[in-house]
Amino acid sequence: LSELAGALDPARSIVVTDAALRGRYGASFPPCPVIEVPAGEAAKQLSELGRVYEELARAGLDREGTIVAIGGGSVSDLAGFAAATWLRGVDFCAAPTTLLAMVDAALGGKNGVDLGGRKNLVGSWKLPRLVLCDVELLASLPDDEFASGMAEAIKHAVIEGGEHFAFLESECRSRPALDAARLDRLVGLSQAVKLGIVERDPRESGERRLLNLGHTIGHAVESATGLPHGHSVAAGLGAAFALASRRAGARRRGAVEADAARVASLLASWGLPASVSAARELALSRGPAAALASALRDDVAYRGAVAAALVSDKKRSGGVVRFALPEGIARVAIEPVALDELEAFVWEAP
Ligand SMILES: NC(=O)c1ccc[n+]([C@@H]2O[C@H](COP(=O)([O-])OP(=O)(O)OC[C@H]3O[C@@H](n4cnc5c(N)ncnc54)[C@H](O)[C@@H]3O)[C@@H](O)[C@H]2O)c1
Image (cartoon, rainbow, N blue to C red):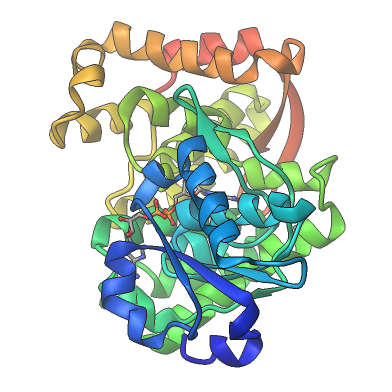
């Protein structure tokens, strides 16, 4: 993290971070003004964006300036959007501090804030000039946040397969197993998958849709359960395998299910749910937020909430979703799936 100062002009840069991270790592921050935002998803609000703009104005950040996100995906989503829009766009750098942000959120240029309870409704594209990953920062990351990042890392390994998936399967099944060298390899392999895809399809007109693997159903599970992003994506990934198995012909079904079992076993070793029903059980065991609890206690109400969230999320897609369908490890296809079929599947999914 201390190398970041050398990659910037501190006199023309400003850091966006949260108070806890500043307290823990502030001594290694570049010597420039700091804007503190709330920790976690609470940062991704228009009101916070407004406050960031006001502080940028107070600090006089000009067109040659740089906004630097030091934090997880919530901080980089907010700061990236501020960088894309402040003075019609200034430079953006990120020093991700969560595993999820290192392997996913800080890369690829998507950013944004939530609106009216819906995630990422307002946002833009802004590629960072620099992403500096210091895996030592992960030492302080709580286990649950770490597992959430593992879900996105496992998603990338499912897309690529081969030695990448085998490495996760054999060497990345618990936190103590991840010494610095393995952690570096895990992050590097995962970044290579995302960056390769983003380079070939920056605006998600084709191949980049692969990165939505697990997210179509995962986002709906997230809004019905309140589980962390990665835990919900894990459930969406398991559900996508179940859908692929259902759609596979008799000749392929055994192979899809065998790969699905390997992925579910890897997810389970990180305490991640691998199905729509497992997400409900996990959310219930954690004592969910009051607003979600009554729907979670009843399976029919829960499935209804997941189906409603799915439909509201996808209703702009004209009745057909371009779905990332895992027909096996390293066999993810983009298939048109009718929204009606997806909704019906949510009611029957394991
Ligand atoms: N833009 C994208 O492409 C993209 C991709 C995936 C996810 N996201 C977004 O990312 C957000 C989730 O981000 P996240 O999972 O990185 O978590 P987060 O940014 O919400 O942070 C979660 C918590 O971890 C704490 N934390 C961060 N780093 C820490 C560290 N090193 N040690 C101790 N505590 C630390 C934070 O203070 C916060 O309390 C969601 O809003 C999601 O939508 C964006």
